[in-house]
Image: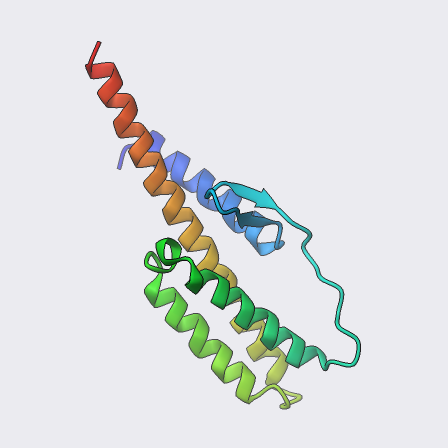
Length: 138
């Protein structure tokens, strides 16, 4: 990998990780990044751990519902779903439950971030090839 390209990839990855970690980055239907509020208001009368499991499950379902993104991260998705299943079965455990929920949430966010990063890298490669083809056609 060329140093400039590697530098660009690291910048893209860092930006995506930073924005995804704060919950502010999402890909819209056209594949471009959009920003959304980081936190949602808690639902009254729902236990926080149950709400967290539902939120993580919805995040993974959203990722899985986009075949172009889900195909890019099958291993990460499997790891996130396994962590979610473990957290769900231990959500009433006062000692380990919160930690397992945190791990599941981070793995889900990681899977989404990596899928988005790989999609952007693929788009970059297509654009780079188009640019090279245009330069060569002159």
